[in-house]
View 1 (cartoon, rainbow over the protein chains, first blue to last red):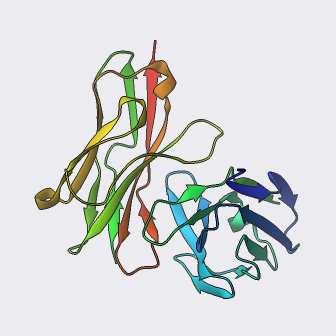
View 2 (view 1 turned 180 degrees about the vertical axis):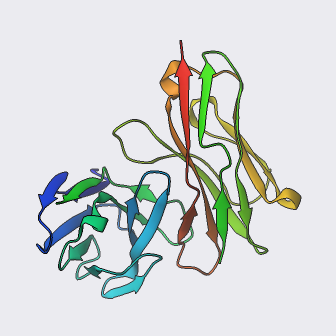
Length: 111
Length: 114
């Protein structure tokens, strides 16, 4: 089992460009999450999903959109990237009420 | 909304020293508690978790944590650290009925010197 995978691993964008980060899990988890990690701030929840076709806002959702068309995939989109979105992005998945399993992360730089 | 405090931001220890990292949370209801570790350049891995039962929980690599409900604390301990324990440690709280969302502390960077 691959667990939670994320693509790409690294990306550099110019301000105003768009991109999509892909998260995939092969554990049949219902719940999936997107976090951003910034120095000194821990991990902050961007959006999450409790099942296929459902999404909800987390703590810092502005500037991001998500979609969960298939149970195993959770996409995070940046419509118009800004330097403030420079961060490391982590995806996670879980069964409800249990621990979350994390992907390897995507390091995004917005110039 | 719940919050998690990790008061030690950066801890430097010599090998074989004992470790205790503090974690306090603010929430009056039932919680599930976690410690995650992030080795340099890697993703978060679960160290240990508490859902119910014995408040002293043991995790991987010799780590343990004690849940003290009256103090809203879940401190992480290890009797003797190794150089390979150098990493960032995150405490996290899951409250019931919140789609299993985690609230993380800001993390503690542990540096173990030889």
